[in-house]
Every structure is written in C-alpha cells, then in structure tokens.
Image (cartoon, rainbow, N blue to C red; front, side, top):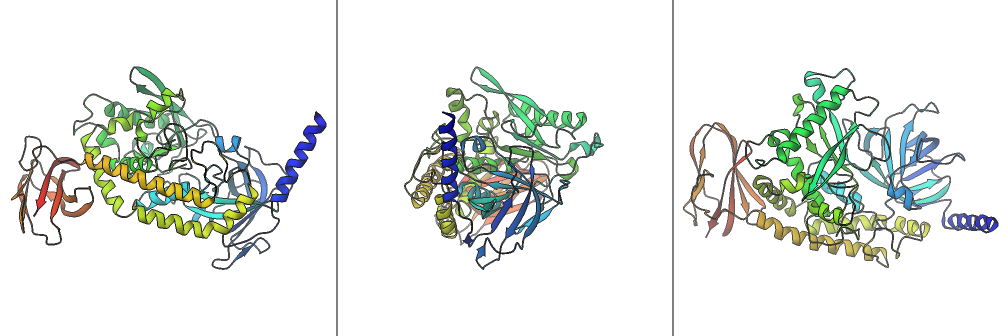
Amino acid sequence: MKLFYTLFILAFFCILKTNAQSQVSTNLPIIKVNTNGNVIYDEPKILADLEIINNGSSTNNSTDKPNIYAGKVGIEYRGSTSQDLFPKKPFGLELWVDSTQKSRKVALLGMPEESDWVLNATYNDKTLMRDVLSYDLANRMGRYATRTRYCELMLNNQYHGLYILMEKIKRDKNRVDVSSLKTTDNSGDDVTGGYILKIDKTEGSISRSWRTNVTNGLQKFTIPIQIEYPKMADITDAQFNYIKDYVTEFETSLLSTDFKNSKAKWRDLIDLDSFIDYFLITEFTKNVDGYRLSTYFYKDKNSKGGKLKMGPAWDYNLAFGNAYYHEGYLTSGWQYKVNDLAILAKDVNFLSPNWWEQFAQDSTFKYRVANRWGVLRNKVLSTERINNWIDSTAKVLQPAMERNNNRWTGVLGKSVWPNYYVGATYQDELNWMKEWIRQRSIWLDGQFKAWVTPLANENEISREFALKVFPNPYESETTIEYIVAKKGKAKISIYDFMGRLINVVINEEKNANTHQIKINNEALQSGTYIIDYQLDEIPAGRVKMIKK
C-alpha cells in the first residue's frame, strides 16, 4: 500500500511537470518567484526571490531581464476555501528589503507603491473576470476598490498559470485612506479614526472583535464584527471601546421601531451614499457571499468627516451566478434576504447583519437607491458597456487562458465547487455570464421602477411634502414650488420615470420661505418625469411631472 501511494504521488507530480512550461512568451506581465527549494506554507511567509517583467507594448519573455522588480519577497498561501480545495492556490506577497524581512514599498505595474500584494488564482471562476469586473465597476462608481493587473506566474522556473496581481485591503493613502491610529490616540478627536472593520470568516490573522445580534423571525444568532485596522497587537482598549460603541449606536438606532423617522440618529452616523453604492454593486452582482462575508466598512476621524462608510468591495469570485447554493445562480431575488436561505440551509455561521433588510423598508433609502440605479444604468452598469469590457478583456487574455487551461486541466468543462453552470469552452463561460448579467439587469430595472413610484396624490402639496408643480401636465413652461421651513441646503432634481438623472435644477442654501422655479426646458422630450426635493439631504417631496 505504501509503495502504491509513493508511485501515485510520483506520477501526479510527473503529470504536473509535463503540463508546466519552463519558458513563456506573452502579452501580459510575467511574475517569477523562486523559493530556492523551500516549501510555501499558509503562514508564516518564507523568503523567496521575486522578478517582474513588463516591456509595455512589446512581448514579454520569461528569459528577459526583470525591469519592474528584482529583489526579495515573503510569500505564503492565502485564502480559506480556495487554499483548502483547489490545486491552483492564491498567494500573499510582502516585498522585503532582504532576509531580515524588513518590508519595502514599491509601485508595481502602474499601481501605487505598497509592500503588501495578492496573487489571486480565482480557480473556480473559469472566466477569471468576476473579481476584476466587480472592482472595475466599483471604481467607476467613484468608490475605491482594489486595483488589478493580469499577469502570468512562473513558480520555481515552471509555468504556474494566469493570475491577478492585486492590492490587499489596507490602510494607506492610496488604498483605504483613513487616518493612522497610534497607541497614544485615546481621547478627543484622536480616538475617532481611522478604523477598518469587516464581517468575515475568522481564519487568518487574528483580530479583535465583538459579536452583534442577528434575528430572523423568532430565531436569534450572533456574528463577529472584526477590526481589521488597527491590528490586534496595536489597538488600545479605548480605541476598541470607541469603535464598538459607535457601530452599536448606529445599529441600535437603525433597528429601533422609529428608524423611519427623518431625525433618527443612524442617519447622522453613516455616509448613506456609500451604503447605497455598496448595496447596488452587491445586488447587481448577486454575490452569494454579499453582506455576510468579505464585507468591509471603515471610519475616519470626526474632523475628516467621521461617518461610517461601506467598502471597499472585495471577493466577488462567486458573483454573477457562479454558485449553486443560496440561489446565487438565479437572476431574480434579493441578495439582502440571504439570511432566509442561509438559515434554512443551516449555514448559520455566516449571516448578514440585519442592516440591509431594515434599509429596504426606509423610503429615503429606497428612492435614493432607485435614482442612483437609474444614473448608473445609463453608463457604468450599461449592459452594452459591460459586454464590451468582457469581450475586450477576453481578447487580451486569450493566449494566456489557453496556457492556463493546459496547466490546470481539471478546470474547463468540469464542475468545480460551487459552479452552477459548466461550459464546454471558455467562450461558453463568457456567454453564460453575459446573459446572466443581462437578465439580472432587467429584473432589477423592474424592481427599482417600483421603488420610485410617485406618491398617490402626485400633483398636490400634502401634509408631509412641501412640493408641487403647476401647470401639470404642461406644454412649454411650468413652475416648481417648494417650501423651506427652516434655512438649509435645497436640492431639486429631475429624473425620468426609470430613475435616471436628467438635471439638477437647484442645489444651494435657501432661507425659510416658499420658493418657485420656472421650468422651460426644450431639451425635455414629451413624457413622465419625477421631481425630487431634498432639504439638508432629508426627503422633503417627490411628485410626478408630465410634459405633453
């Protein structure tokens, strides 16, 4: 038996070596790692040599001299499921000055300088695009998400496949740009930021955390909220208590019975726009881990804004229909309701906080989400633009994908956990993802259209809303009248009936009074529009306007 096992192992490595090239010529950057005979572990990092080759528009050859980086690196396996289940493993890299393991910051492949980097394998995403596409969307939405570069990896002089070099989520002026916290920052404005927090598995680096309650009907559970920054060895008790109390105050207000009140405390504690964008990218991608794993949020000092912000987006390899469980493959359904499915499947270790279900009951959140969706669907989330991105990226990756699939022959055309769809070819995988995105977009269009349905009494001023339009319908000119009960910043916007922003009519401070604006816009085509009025970012009115 022992002899059989030994022969099996030898045969396995012979197959791997047969599939592995010792040289490569590519249009992508080449990363070469040599561990000098040492074995890579989960942790700690081991010393290795790192070379990076990128000749710009010219072809890169593994025999070329390194022109981006040549030096020492600490390397380890990273990830949880991806490390345990898959033969093609992701790596964590830390650039080192020398064998003393002192870190050094270097700008790599057009990305800002840092010492910590990730080589992402995305073994179970056969398109190798889901993470990169999601981060691209987040960046185009105006939110920081990790920068990425496709590259090909040579490990110990053998071809190891197509990888994604990407930034690690980290406090840095070019990454999550929050203030540095020193151990002496324990009071006043000093203690108020910056912090990076996450909802995630607890494997990997141990961090300080507390548990918060999650309810589902009569069932009660708890989940950990972990502090990613400052690290466990550095955070003080005063800092831990401050951020815990801040998040708890937000949760308590949001989950209270009067959370819909325009003066509810939670509205002052968070940057609502960041929560809206995070909600939209998670729902658009229907990331099966969305809200409950790899979910980051952060807070800077009060003197620098100081509100709790969602993001960055992270870990979307199981998005866009790439999971058979928790209905991740369906183009319909809300991801924010994932707890219902997770609890039914007894997956109670990884639940979402109740925040998102509560947000979805708040009228302010709903119509601002719907309006933002309309704006994004015009450009960033346009199906045509996304399809073009996928096609152009596939064209660049094609030669490398062929090498990758030859190296890792157990991927293409075979089911890899937790794939729902298995295509026979790479193009099949791309086509299926594109069609999934198209159908998901249509479903969300319908849902968000309902979220911007005007008030029942659209054309008259009511007890709650200080806004009216007259005449309405109109042919050439109409008047918007709005009431400012207390001096504040008034913002009036015109949206089409799908929630796409047409024009911001006014966005300035106004004294308490009744104000009027004449609308004579020949650019507006005949149709139905929504006039949205906010005062100091609080909803003050919304009516339907019809141009004949």
